[in-house]
Amino acid sequence: MSELLERKVGIVACSGEELAEGTVARLAALKVLNELRPRDTVTICLPLFLAGGAGDRAFARLHPTITVDGCDLRCAARGTEKYSSKPAASLVVNELVAECGLKRPEGRRRLNAAGQKAVEATAERLAALVDQALGKEVGTEPAAEETTRPLHEEEREVACSCGSGVAVTKLSIDGRTVELVALPLIFRHLRDRGLGQDDEAARELFDTVKIYNAVPPEAEASYREAVRREYATYCQKEKTP
Amino acid sequence: MPEYLETTVDKFTFRVAKDRLYTPQGAWVFWMKPESPNRVRIGLADYLQQRSGDVAFATVKPVGTKLAVGEMLGEIETIKTMVELPSPVSGTVAEVNAALDVTPEVVNQDPYDKGWLAVIETTAWEADRAKLLEPEAYFLAMQAEAKEELKKL
Amino acid sequence: MNPEKTRVVVVPCSGIGKPFGTVSREAAYELCEELRPESTRLVALAKLVLGDAAARELLAQYPAVTIDGCKQMCASKMVKQSGGTVAHEVAVLDVFRRHKELKPEGIAELNEAGRKLARVLAEEVAASLDSSEQTVKGASHV
Image (cartoon, rainbow over all chains, first blue to last red; front, side):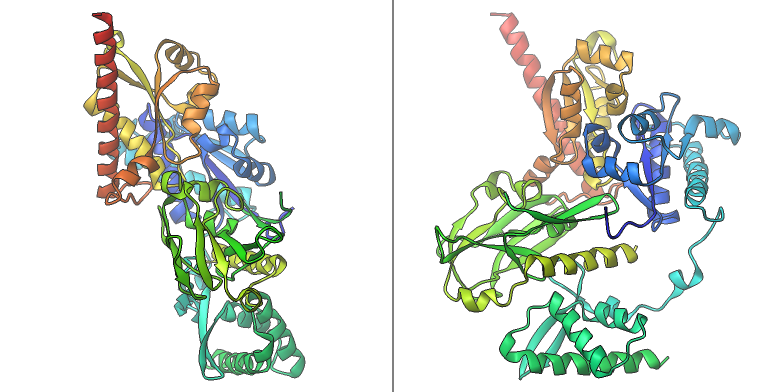
């Protein structure tokens, strides 16, 4: 079982190419995944799911899924139920269009204006279903502090050149520039736990740093001191608004 | 077949082979003892290859190239990003995976076996080895990174 | 589309996780709506896999061209598993390797490079279909 299991909703869209409604389903799913509920949703790639994608199928067994189909064939809903488990909810675009009194979408490759409206309506309904599946109040927007919080230090740090995005901090140790990874994350983790700068905290700090960074044994004392100073600087900055 | 440490984040499972060492950035280093005690094989760890995306091109320095630790061993261009691969050890490039020219996607499909990148004849293995992470340490680092990536959504 | 002139069924993967999935979809539209509308028929992969009778009938009658976004090759795999014959399988990644200046971005909407890549892919498939047809015609005249 995953140690990082966090409740999310899998979205399975039919993406049917033959009808405009399939394109609506696809675009509505992407709108929810990327704009409306990015933290709460995960995309399930239907072709991969059908072809045996283990990760997608396992996710759909452990987490609620919501399917979005273009038409009554309900390929996404049937496929999800067949290869994983019954979806928590299902949307069918042509039914929703009729329910909302919208014009039928046209243009399977480039949706017309009616198609764009159908995307908006489907995405809104899908977002509401996501909220329901997660037990949230329908229409919950991300909390203000999540969208307006200032960038933390680590988001301005240089990202590791491997492309992983992990912050790399350069410290001067024994006259050389040394790169240590994940320092801001480690610092924040300690602060969040309420640890100060006493000897015990310093020990824990350095033990954690050594998990993520190889420290030459002969230079351990210098590294320990450099990290301790950097942490003190971090704590000072955190106090200052 | 090595044993693996595994973690699942959303629908992605990341594996860490237990029979090799790792750089913090996500390259693996397999010591080829006892057959070739002076050689190591190098590749990308599962998390790094998944995070980077489908490999379109993989170029590695040719056989005979001498490298110090940190000097560029290769570049992996994926559909999302360019992954630079600094050499985790000092030595000379002894072999380059021929599959990279024809089917570079093997790096994604089989990162710990057929998707290897290069073999290096090492010149300072004991010293270089001390700077690498044991699989358990890399696993924790990788887990933390994966978690942070989720929070950045 | 003239059913009597249909030569192949086109099945894109339309994967939603990567721009290459959208390229597969766009290339299928380009092929079936612009380049060879008379001789191609677009079929949704999921319909086929889940047993739609009309889709299976088409697959029984005509060979398939599959267009996959990535090397998982879901469309090609699933068409074969559904009893179809894959006359031509294309991986967008392979086409991209021949045209690395056309790096696709965007999933909901492709960038210009992505649309061009789709067009290049569709043209390559169209040329391949034309070549196969010529071979068949040539053989029939022997």
